[in-house]
Amino acid sequence: MQDSVIENRDYYAILGLPRTASADEIKQQYRVLSRQFHPDKQSPELQDYANEFFYRIDRAYQVLSDEKKRKLYDSYGEKAVLLLENNEEIVKRDASIDTIDDLIHTIYQRELEVKAGQSGSFTMTVDASSLLHPAPVQPIPSFMMAAPPPSRGPHIASMQIVQSIQTRLDASNTLSLTGTATAQGGQGYGVGVVAWQHMLSPDQVVTLTALCGARNKVVVEVAQSFTKTLQGMVSASYGNEGVETGVKVVKQLSDELLGMAEVQLAEAVECSLRGEYAASNSKTTGEVFVGQDLGARVSHLHTLGGEHGHKVKGEAVVSMTDLAFTGTVGKNPSAFSKVNLSVECGLRGVTLRGKYQRGSMTFSLPIQLSHFAFDLPAIAIGYGVMAVACLGEWLWCRSSAGEAQKKKKAEEAKRRAFESEHERLAAVSQQEMMKGYAARVREQEAKKKGLVILKGVYGCAESVKVPAKVQQMEGALEVTTALQFMVKESRLRLYAGSKKEYMGFWRPAEAEKVRLLVRYQYGDKVYEVEVGDAEPLYLPAFRATLIGDADSVN
Image (cartoon, rainbow, N blue to C red; front, side):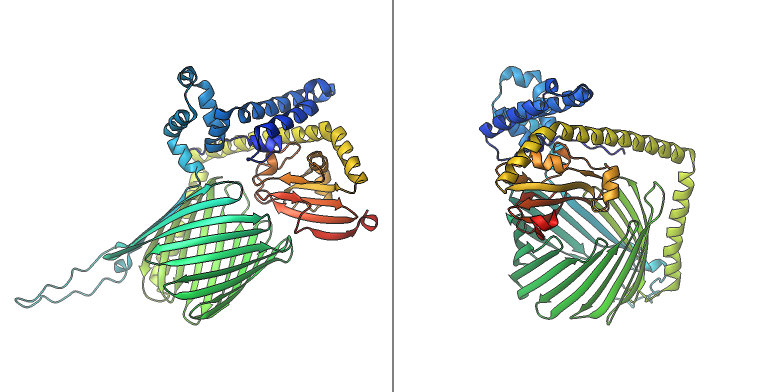
């Protein structure tokens, strides 16, 4: 199955407006941008890019200024707008907004399910321990006595289905519904979860969660970003287990090292300390926990070289009640799917686990090979299956089909690299067109001691803080001019969502962890702030780090 993504332009980001912008605000912003990027006002070497940018701005305005098109775009994306424009029957009937909405919803029901933020998992646990350790033969019962239960071969021990859907109500509110159904033996139970998340500010989020069914509980959680490297969370809940409270603190100690401390106050006090060290091709995690159990957990994930995305992982758990070791191999067949195969052996037996993830959907198949601790035959079978799977994948990659797929991937990578280079040159050209206007804004802001952007860098997390890479545009691009261009009345607003759609912004297509680093002057002080790609940025920022006085820093 081929993966495909319906790429939708973020028209609001193109115009630099929030999704709540009024019709007058859209019209006013369009006039400003169309004057700035009109092809007739650009130098000959920028004409081609200017034509492209002007079309993009004009297209965004045509959609957002039309009531019907804007409603469809807000609900379903750009493809629904194209359907409206290309469907002669709808245009001829001059259908109402509600009628168009029903038609679009029917035609694109399957795609809309994905756009609504659905995710889920299906786990089926198979007990195959009887293959290695069959039950002893039962004696023939006496007359009039009940027959012994038949010995069970491999059978399904349990199944669990989790389905979740998330809906963004507006820029500050998100609602999610989750259902869990579990069947084990002859019993089954379910849990329903409703969660409402409200963003009080870019640095503070409140989440209210209600569970009902097999578990009844109400949870209130408040998350706060104190600085760009320090976040905290406080939670309180009430349910069948009584009152529970929790505190969690996360500290980014360095670019590679993350620290985490958590305390849970319930029937017993639970405390844990966790650290993560991430390098370019590996990640090591360690955790110490104390409470109902006392122990430690350590794991190491290593990504092997090559274009297939092969990974190996080892994990060990040592505690008062458990001793277990897990080995995992996996690969990424595509950018949207993952396959893992692991063997877990410990005091609780031996389990072979297969896992396939595509997008936000996950299928897991744990197979219990033995209920005995560190059963050597079961361990041998588990790792034997893993070895056969690795050998089969290795042979397939070197077969004609594998070579054909490798060639196809190489061509796709070449195409993406070409598109990324075009987007990079386009972003540079956009900033070139912004220079005059941005310089005037900068001068006006400096005179009134307003918001002056000193430095802005957007791109891969490992590149934004390396001046040499920024200068060579290796993984990151300086966006100082683009940010100053968007400053209005000593304020800058970049709303939630990827910033790659903003004029003058670019990031590599394969970038996973993307950051925006901004150093700015406001009044007589210089500040610095860093946000993720999907996070909003409001300047002046509450959580910005004070660098010092403007005179000394400059």
